[in-house]
Image (cartoon, rainbow, N blue to C red; front, side, top):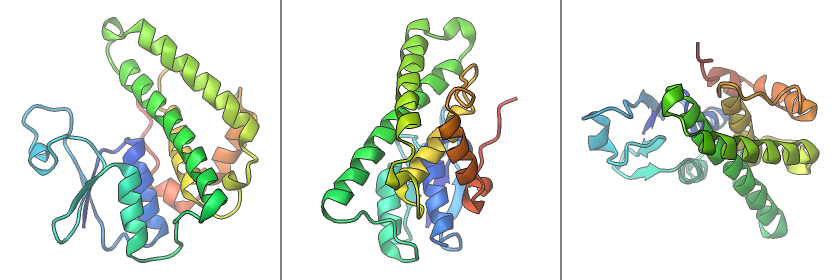
Length: 203
């Protein structure tokens, strides 16, 4: 299988961590995709140009980190990241959805802050900054939830990638104002799968 990524994509990192945790690295080739450029050959593989994108050996192509993780998880390997049945499963879905909402907002903020200053939208920056602060304040209060503790699960993986991406955004500081999140993130970041996929800090 071939997994197309961009180095600092938090969505691609989610999949890469799952691949490592399930010991599927020998079966999944990670390929850097050339995105956001005119006439990239990657567009012949994935017309949307987005990452992550998984191409299976039998030709099936999958886009979207949640879908790819679900597919890889059902193939083989331990541990299993499948959701529990009933209320526990719905609670995990609820938390993961809100974590992904946090990540989606930060992704918008990161793209906007990555533009030249004169090309940035102050309205978008302010809106997404405020949204991120509200959500991180919420997570600071809820980080002791059982699903953020114990054995690694998808909620933890997605949230870890979310906080890792937050560190890359210029002029966005969260660690000193959220000590519980910072402590939780530092512990999670020590896992080999997180160390191996750690994004490069922009210069």
